[in-house]
Length: 125
Image 1 (cartoon, one colour):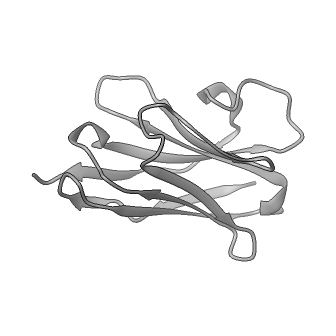
Image 2 (cartoon, rainbow, N blue to C red; image 1 turned 90 degrees about the horizontal axis):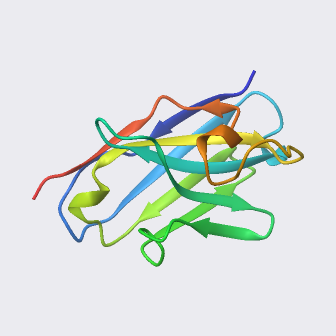
């Protein structure tokens, strides 16, 4: 069983930065493709970023401001968020899918098998 635990959320002013972390336990971390999603109250969970062997891919709304990275030695994936906007206020979730999976899309929730509990990012402006 794969377990994901997010951390790093909190209050941040518009224009500020935060780095989210997602620690993964269980099976071999390097064999999983990792993604970040976010969800506002009353809205569907939406894609933010995914890191694949070919690199990071981003939603248009965060491109140029957010960076996804991973440290396989630490079993951790990160989301560096810069130039934060009030619209970035959401609960952020990390997610994992086997790298060999052909099920679903990298850019939608149906493509992921495992999810963390989420971490809240709130605009304090």
